[in-house]
Length: 314
Length: 254
Image (cartoon, rainbow over all chains, first blue to last red; front, side):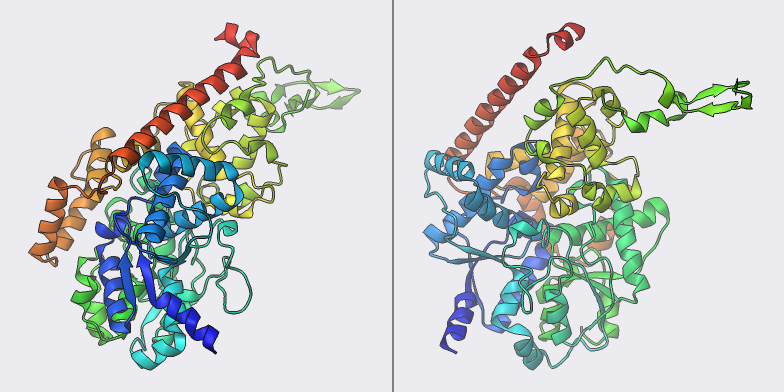
């Protein structure tokens, strides 16, 4: 019993790595994550003087630089903030921190490069195993859990039909997520369910949605927009066909991609879809009785105010 | 000499005989060139090594052609010509001319990692696609792809300041690819959001254009990164020139 509490305590206060997207286009995700942390009594400590995780773009230019950039974030969390858990809500950041951890564990050359660059840049190098990287989903699941949410939300999302969209970076490639696919209680890379679990605990009705881990074309959202629009339209139409009112998202790139290409599909291809997009933290915030404005819902491109009024959530 | 199966059934490689009778049997019509002697003179034996020298391509030698990557591929589902398994085959075989037939779509990989996830040999086909696209540009076979322009602009901001700024990425990308800034969808989005968003938020975005988000005391990290890029670039040039030097007949042809 003691162990369990200790384990939960470890996640109640985590280093928070918001990342570039949450400072810009994904602002609603940042605002709502902080709002639910406050409401649930969880403590988020921003990683001191963080930098970009490297994202896909730097990886394409020079793969080991992405490892270095992510390792610097982890190094700051460990050495400047004394953290042993880093929580990243952005799928891209989460993926890259995980990938850096994997590379540093399995490839001595990566560690060598990180050590060398860290010395030149004048900070402590990050060593594999010093910190644990978790996603915002793990964070809620590990601290409050379904039982806690049931208690606090009293099923407030009842009647809301949700399609849970996880995207690519949260589950693929599976080898960089050693803690997943470990049977009951752990996340599945093939059929992820953490978001389903949390929202169901808050009373939402999860629809049978086959494209949970489909790709939204986020990498080419601007550079190959027509392809992205096709991929997004497919996701939006599948969500509507499964009867969803809203798609719950957990990644700023997916979220703004879905919103942007919903508009673009209508403009360029004349294909209109009505389904709304909300971050899962915004949905949980509504369930906890926080006002839509405090969750940054009005800064989303997709206007869900009518739906929320209809479902008595706003 | 290995048979390159796919080219044999292309329309231009099928022979037509208007009137042909063999042993009294009329066999007029389309003929496969299977039976004709073929010689492929332009193998680039260093092709695999060249692509392996680019970022992401280093595990291509592991492929055993199971086809799981193509089967899982997001882009293959909407563009059947996009076939990672086949391109890896061509590269390993050295069939540069065949590979060039698809040169304009290779950059379209969206990095969904379905291939890397499923690959039983850890080839990381997603990386191979990126490496191949860069190789095509380096050799001058394709112009710089929009994806590469985007990656470079994004990385420039990261290397310079430690962070990116969304609006600047969008703006610079549209300018660099010579697209109009007032995209119809963008206008529709801005218009929709302007009706709801408070002034405070608009101000914040505007301020971010002047005072760009940046990581403090980034100077040394930036210098370290720039040195590393230079070193890796030189190492790559060295690797490429070595693989070319081994093939004097290709050097002469160029």
